Image 1 (cartoon, rainbow, N blue to C red):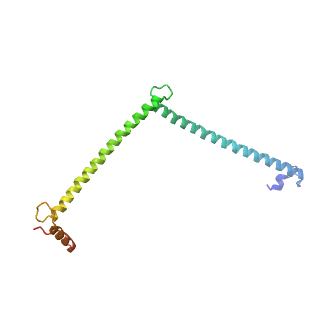
Image 2: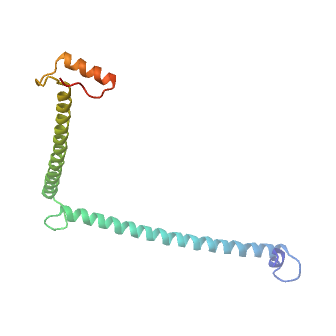
Image 3: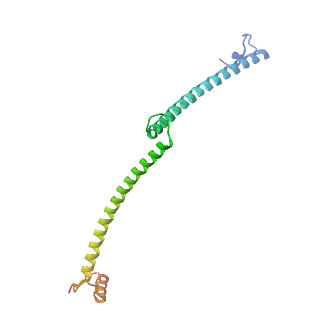
Length: 155
């Protein structure tokens, strides 16, 4: 159906100014209805989002209160905050001490490995096995490495 036939409300084959006006009013009402429907749908979505947010916030609030409210009176006192802070600090201190222990273990292993490697190198350079490195042994070691022998000559 053409737009002209839609506007010809009395069906006489002609479109009068009143028919244009009435057709336009109808279209405006239809558009307004669609807009109102869209706004209502948007409002419903916003309400659902708001409800979900409030539920989430209530859950978080409940969790915080349950964590801090040691006497379960629904309120958080200064003493409860202090008690919670001390407990949290103690837990953190324990975790830190455990981590320091782990770091110390790693450092000890690195130290043992480093000492073993330095002893290996020292023994390779110390050709007279007196436990000390003299300039002659060091120079000999460097010359051997430069020549590409890879190993120093043990005496």
